[in-house]
Image (cartoon, rainbow, N blue to C red; front, side):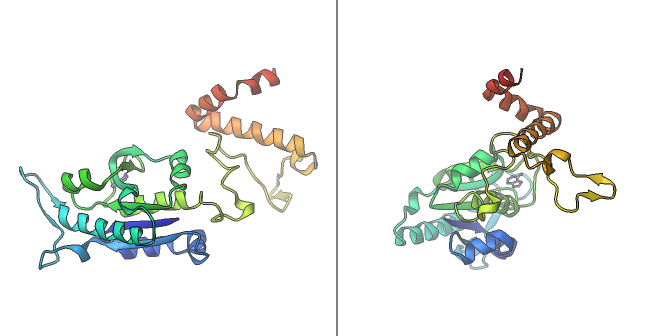
Length: 245
Ligand code: ADE
């Protein structure tokens, strides 16, 4: 899978994602990451990419031309590789978008290419958004100084759902949110640490008992910390409660 990021701070994207598991996936060529500097595409002789807003108001706006030309260059390169550049999803990261969540990450991991547009200043000229953006996505109800961190958050979450990025032992399937439940508590050696003992059932070797205990712990934790997720799970798994009764 290939990630393309249109940004004014390409080094932030590359440095932020080159380490750890995502870096390893890039080395293995399971994913690729390209950060394109929007400033390289401006036709302004002073390399400016922003200007005042019509109608007045504080702050500067990113202009349509450099953003559009940066997108066209990326779409063209995707076409050259035999992909579908103009049909590739373009995600504008903005606090005004739909809130990102795990199911969205999983779905987007099925795309061959994805383009992210990172805004700065007070935003981006509406006309270029209308022209190129397919999805408006936020990472939560707070405002950051730019779209780079949100783009990195989304790329990390999407990339780890791409087959082969996580090793077999760290599968993305059994973890929190895959079925709405938070993860059960886990323990490693020693059996007794500062007087705190590992729950007996985990030492029993009874696989079925262990699984039952883990599910109960997940349910308890989810009910307490994320009641709305618990309700959703309970709705979809009514047979579990019938069986238990
Ligand atoms: N840009 C600034 N804040 C943001 C947020 N919360 N989500 C996505 N993009 C943003």
